[in-house]
Every structure is written in C-alpha cells, then in structure tokens.
Length: 277
Image (cartoon, rainbow, N blue to C red; front, side, top):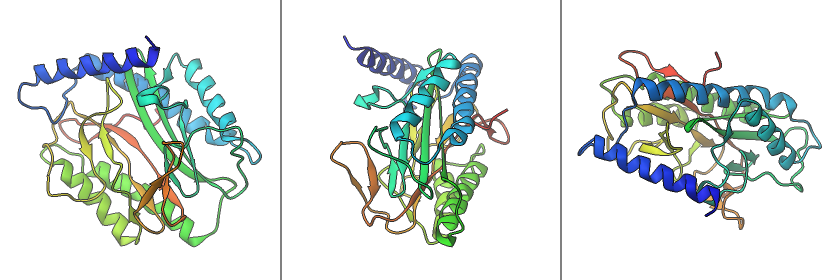
C-alpha cells in the first residue's frame, strides 16, 4: 500500500476517534496539552521554513528548485512534508505565482523572474503533528500601489482574523473580520477555499471562510487550533483550476495573495503558533 494512503487512513481513523471522544460535537476538535506540545513543535518547524525560504528565492530559479530547497529545510528539522501525497498532491510545498492563488506545483519549466508575486504555502509534519503557514512577497520588491495594497491588506486581514479568535466568539466572527478588511480595500475574496482546524491532521473541522456565511460555526473554545488564511485577489473573486488538477488561479488573470498562521485558542488571547519564536 502506498505510504500516502497509509497516512490518509491514519488521519481518517484518528478523526473518527476524536469524534467519538467529542460525542455529538462534531464541528471542532479540542486538543490535549500533550498534543498541543507536538503541534507547537511542528508549527515552529513550518515557521522556520517560511522565514528562511524567501531569502533563497532568486530570479532564474525554477519552482521545482524552490520545492527541493523546502524539502531539505523540512528534513533538516526532522520533519516531512504534510502536503506530499495528501489527496494525491505531488509537491513538497505549494508555490503559486502571480495570478495563481493556491496549490501551485513545483515545476522545472516554471521559471521565476524579477517582480513575480510569489506565494509559499508550507505544511510540515513532525512526529504526527502538523504546522501549516503561508506568506506572499514580490521577488525583488515593488512600488506598484495595487500590488502593495493587495499584500498589505491581505496581511492585515489575517491580523484582524486572528484578533477575533477569542473565547466566546464564533468562527463567523473571524470570517467577518477578514471580510471587512478585504471589502475596505476592494479586494476579491476567494470563496472556494478557506481556513480550517489543524493539528494531528492537516484539515480538521471547523472550516473558516474568509467571508460571512449564514452558518456562524462553532463557538471558539480553549484547546482549539485554527489555521486562518485569507486568500484575496486584486480583481474578481472567481477562480479556475488548471489542467494539472491542482493549480488554482484568478479567472481574470489578476494578482492574488495568501497569508496564513495557525493559532491556539487559550482562555484569553490567541497564541500564534506559527509566529517564529
């Protein structure tokens, strides 16, 4: 049996075990202190990759080269990719350029150039626990006001979403905070992809949309671990998927940005697990 199938089966079994322990509460996961220690370690490993990798990216590199560097970083910290083989994904991390929103695959023929907007989505598995984080930047920097607006307000949307992640609030409060910032900057909000719970599996409940829905979601409680990840576009919110079955891009060809942190719900302020310590 392929290794990736074994991992998916293990996650499926673990999810059923969690649901049994939660009784009828099937819309969120509460982690133990022991599990949280493992999640912290994996989150810091992912944060290390996120902080180190952008400085290694140069014009003329292929996205496959970036993927290979990420693999070496992850291995050096005693981890493995949380993405490789997940539902068949073929890459170590997700590398999305310009109008690509998420799930870009490292390719030898995809060459970076000065001025490209690069989004790196990084998932690391250390000891069976997951760290998941993302960052976007322009290779070589930019003075373009629209690109700066996109990057600044996507990052601000993440910050405001995290600020809303306090006990007593609901998932919808996070969604509302992100949406408010996106609308204030007149940015398109990707609706097909969203944040999620994360910890022992890459995708735990609940889902965390970046826009307000009719469902307020579960109330936020200490012990929940959430991956909050705004994906915002300079133009339309509509997306298309490439023929590779993975790479998602804006339907109008305009730029997209993606930032992500994992946070632990505490009795007071959220702890940002993927903030490099």
